[in-house]
Image (tube, rainbow, N blue to C red; front, side, top):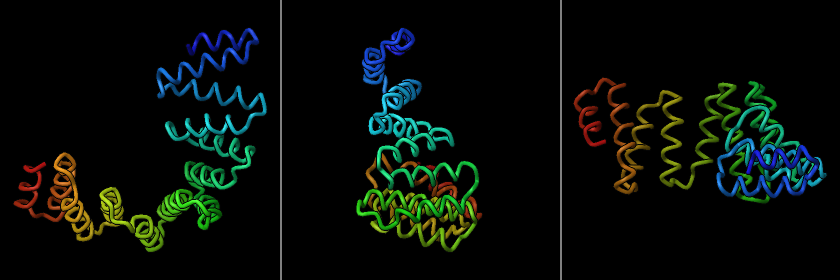
Length: 212
């Protein structure tokens, strides 16, 4: 359907091409080239809301400076400023312009949508990490993971690893182990083994790795 859509597009049959590409996405949601074609087609039709959906899907599945900026531009044209700020922050991170990324993230830190505020915290944390502002990075990560879900604890364990805080990383992993389902425990034991190896506690490392 992707190639068929391309053929229809080349023949000037834009609407039929869109239908073909949408069928291609339905059959294979990971077909990245198709999202790009759909986004471009809706952009040419000045339907920026639908273009934004396609370009944002592409940015989520294959984030890069190009895809994230394209998503930001489409969202801005569609009147979705908050989501545009988020993707601009991500795009700035790809170029290493972390002060710009932070400025964009700060634009949405008080957004009315809780999901948007979570994205703002993620982008803010990444900006602080890029700028090597360790204290601000840690503070933001603690805000981001305040609910202490399993995902939160694993995210904090990763953050503490980046900060070389192995004691706190171990603490997060042990908390995660208490609430994890049996199928989720293996990677946690593995990380505990890595922490023990890093600290030179070989017996503890072997025990954890055997449980992984």
